Length: 258
Length: 110
Image (cartoon, rainbow over all chains, first blue to last red; front, side):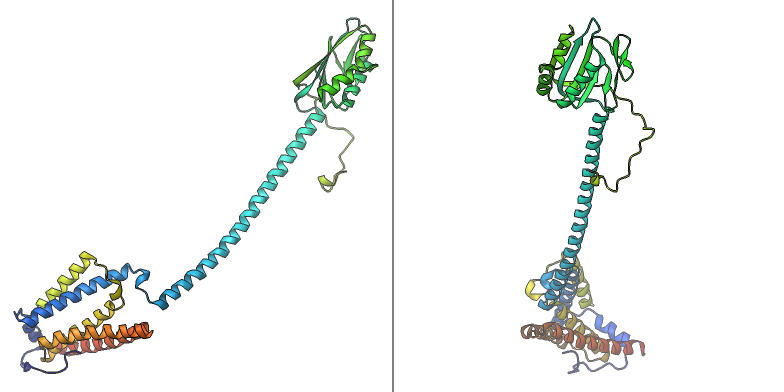
């Protein structure tokens, strides 16, 4: 396959190898020399092409076994990444559900706070309700009458009540103040105005029942008007005071409270 | 000298043109290149041995390339293409090494 036979040129033994190379390198215009140059050109072209091809090697130049190995690798990697993705998805789901749980707990707590604020009179409230105005020029209205009115309103489902500028809460009490009525120590001014938030229809009927508030007030010779409102605001607030004696019993869990 | 120039020109052309190797030739080109390199080194060695012949060089170059490609082709057909390619590369590599060793001994006396 290579130069191993047929020494046609007698070896110029006297010359040194370098001189022999130089001699051979001289341009000779023979057909074989031109052909050798062409072959060398092809070789250089092929080398450059192959090197370039190898740098941008694509899958199409690979053998079947290599392709199978690559495919195996890719499948293995893909399944590993799949598992990874599943784990991350689970973690994400847990985190998301955890945060929504937190948000739900926060929302529930806020709603509870709002409801308790309305009940305790520490939050302003608005909604449908009735406005009662009692004009009592002869000062015949006694605290018991107003207390009855408040009880009647509570029976009828009033959720927030304000008399004059005072919010009515669980600890509210009526008292006598001179010729007038005081609520929680605040003298109520004439005419007495009662705002109650609740079902307006029910409450106004409760005021009008025979022997009820309207009857009593008119029996005293005073005038009363009951107005239904689709939206009124109970704006008076009850100052929150720390209980001196009562302490809450710690409950293990809020849900366990009866 | 002219063949050396041809080699350089071929390299330059290949580098600048970036030709795509046709798909059917792709497994054979690297082997053919190795075989051609073997023929080139054999030719240089023959020059130094004083037995160089243009015609023999051309024929041995072509036959080297063709036979190497054919062996790989046969291996591919038989299903042992990659192993046979490795074998051909090993054999040609050994031949290149021995040729280069001979050239070295001629040129540097070592």
